[in-house]
Length: 326
Image (cartoon, rainbow, N blue to C red; front, side, top):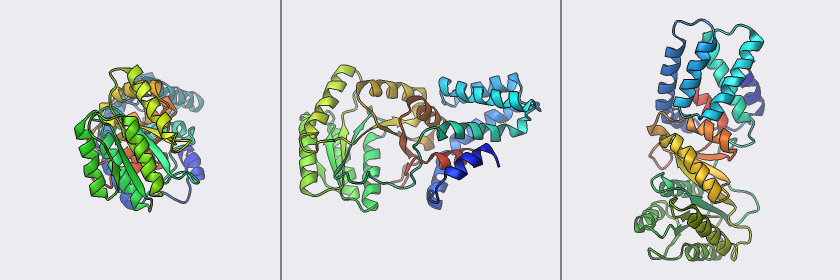
C-alpha cells in the first residue's frame, strides 16, 4: 500500500464528498491539472530516473504552479530523501511520489476533513466575520455560503457591514433575496460596527443559527483596517460575548502569488481563523491552495470551483489531492 493510501485511507472517514461534488471539483481543477501535468511530462521527457535535472525542473513547475517557494522546497526535500533511500526511482513513479508527498504535507494539519457545511456545536448564533479585498468574490462567497447553510437546515442572517461601497450593500441584498434569508443593512457610509451590532441583535431576536458579516475590502492602510475590524469585533461582543467565532479571509485563487501577499497583509491586520479560496475553476493556479494551507497553517475551509450557487465546496484535503492526481 502506498504512503498516500496509508495515511489517507486510515484517516479517511466513511463520509466523503457526494459524487456530484466530486465531479464539480474535478471539473473545477481541470485547468490546473492540465497545465501542471503537461509541464511535468515535458520535464521528464527522455529521462528514465529521477535525477537532479528532473528535481530542478520539478521545482520550477511547482513554483510556476503557485505552490509557493517555501512549500515547493519542502516537497522537493521530501522527494530527495525518497530518492536517497530508494537509490533508484524511475520517472514513471514521479506522479505517485509527488502525490504521496503533497498528501503527507496536507495530512500534517488537522483540518480539511469536513465534507458538509456545518457549524460548531453549542454555539448559537455562530458568528462568521468575512474579510478580503474587493474583487476576490467575497460577497458572492457569502451568498453561496448562506445558501449552503440554509440548505443544511440552519437559520441564517446576513449583515452588510461593507458600508464604503453602495454596490457591496446592493450585491449582498441581491444574494439575500435570491437565497431567501434576512439581511440587516444601513445607508452607504454608515458605521460598519453599528451595522454589525444591529445584525447580531436581530439574529438573537430571531433565534438565528448563523450570522455572516460582510466587511469592507480595503487594504491600502493596514492600521485603519486593523482599527476598523477591532471596533467591529468589540461592538459585536456587546451582543454575543465571544463573537466572532471565525474570521474568514476570502482569497482569489486565480491571482496566485498575490493571494499569498493578501494573506500576509490580512493575517497581520486581524486574527484570521480560516480561509476561502475562490475562482479555482478559471485558473491554472490551483496549486496555491497547497501552498497557502502549508505556509499560513490557517485552515482552508471552503473553495470556489465554479460560478453556480452549488459550486462553493467545503475543502476536503483527501478529495482535493485525489482529484488533483486523478
